[in-house]
Length: 328
Ligand code: AMP
Ligand code: MG
Image (cartoon, rainbow, N blue to C red; front, side):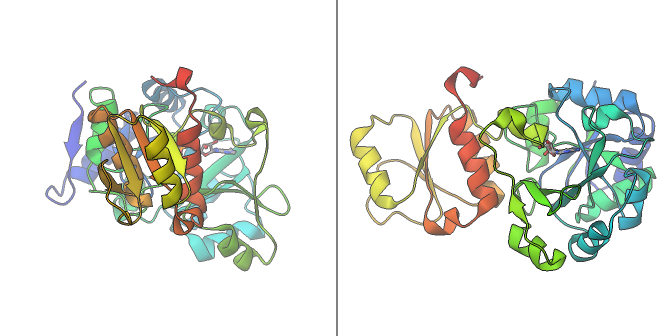
């Protein structure tokens, strides 16, 4: 299959063409403000099965359903509790995914067999227009091969899926660059299953009750199945240090060849290794670039400012925890 690269900035037919492909059961990758999604029509179980197949995604890892208006949630969720409307009012469109009861019309495969459904309304104008033109919600996980860093531009999608999907809609680089916050509204109080750009404090303020991060020792018991799989990791070994002093110590004691340093600011001392910027928006692009360059180790300097960013720390810890035997 030839994968079409569609650009709405230069081609007025790009989105109508993408919507037509989706309606005929094909898969189309599209930009959102978080990362690129791999979309398929939510009520088309065959298309959904193909999403799992082309990504190499385990069948028990559920997908997020994307809607173009808060009311559209009624098509995929069995019930919309008051907490849903409150959060939708404040955070939709935006990088927030809510977990609710699945509507019987949604094929179970979308939710990896769970009786719940995760949904969100993205705020990227291309994503919203594509969902509207298609006329139904789109199930869309990140448009990467399973285990690879999520794609934050069209070239990343092609790197992983060229020839395997009908089209990619090019919307340039993603504004946020990390996946959405996932909050379970079926538990009381609500629990964050995956940290993202919308924080626990923001959610608590709107809901008027405490919101906590899900904390489990045993990853296999996670209520968010996707969290137990290897994620966000480059081929290189990722090593976290928490101060510039610790970096100096590591550089003195470890023989680091073909390595780079990722840090949010310039080093306060001369550095022999290349230094690359550490920012949420570009983390995955840096991981992919390091893989292409054959980098063996990435040392990440987690300054106090970085440590305060729950979403960024979550992805960095996951990348650092990837066990060597899982490295491709
Ligand atoms: P991705 O779209 O690739 O970022 O992955 C979707 C994420 O949302 C995974 O971490 C899933 O575990 C999580 N998720 C999707 N649906 C559900 C659900 N019904 N219950 C809990 N977590 C979910
Ligand atoms: Mg993903």
